[in-house]
Image 1 (cartoon, rainbow, N blue to C red):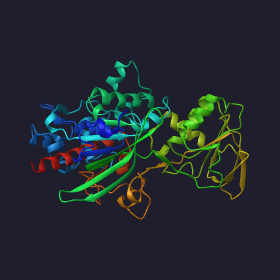
Image 2: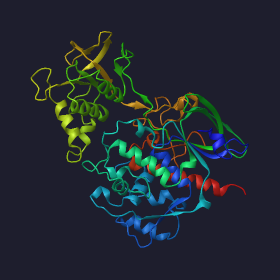
Image 3: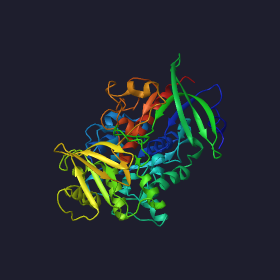
Image 4: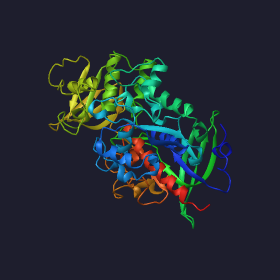
Length: 470
């Protein structure tokens, strides 16, 4: 693949790009769709079940949602997200989904090329981002329909591929393929550069406004690295949070049998390095990634030791927040976690739960040393370790790794606890004009809701474009 500059006219000229999007997951794809001139309007004759929103939509017939006051439209909406624009866009795309309904979207889409905003989407992977790094048979946490992007329903795409949902959810492999296919079907491919690794973003303030320099390299098929340097008036951070797995920070964590991604267990299983006759696989963590690892290991009859610090009944555990009817397999793991099988025979052969245990160190001879809730030490021989305790966004390409952009600049940037501080109706950084953040970086952690951030950014950038002098 050629360099971003050569492949996209204007990228290497003296005129900067209008927008560079860093990250090509669902947020970046949805934003590219909106910036490519695909414009949402309220469908004539469509009635929204929310009476206040319906009345507001009726006040501006024929006016694009992008051109309306998003603050006004989203006022009074409630749902499973803190972002008002995310709730708005979700309500327009899926009008009554939280109440068990199945109403069609109240939006209609028009492709208006004259409204397109020039942009470039840079991503390490193929379009779909981190979804290409997840084991393909894993099912999505959200319902399959909620993984969809505007104007191409997942169920319609699945039917054409002769695929089906599993208990109303899709596999990660299907969703990764859907996102890649979406870029092709919607004609967005010329805006995307895969294999692009951003290493630095610098900025300056000029007379007309901010200017950003985005530098990095393009990983080519022959293994070489082709450097690039691009200029843009606006930059959107859409990198997600899966770049940097969280670590325990204990001695021995860098030993070769200790891993931080489920893919390591998949590879060891395929290679025959871990079998039902091996020492147990040690899985550390009490979230959904750890649960996925338990389910994977159980599927292959691998012995498991599952250790976690928090009590099983901690209301903060994600299992205590998921409806049992929708997520039976995760609740099965939660039920297994309740078994204090280290003290009594377990009904789950080959599985041992260690609640309230704190890892102290790993030894060279594949031993893991724990402190139990009573303060004693326990040692276990293991074949492989998976430390699955969350992940952090990798913003090392920003000055100060982006720490000064967070809501609390004195604390590490975290999608769940300390996201990038953005204006709720434009998603522009409150600290750096021209810099935007969408998706988990802005606190929107589900695909269903990241699209509202894309709507807010697209609306903001459109307004900037219309204000530019001719």
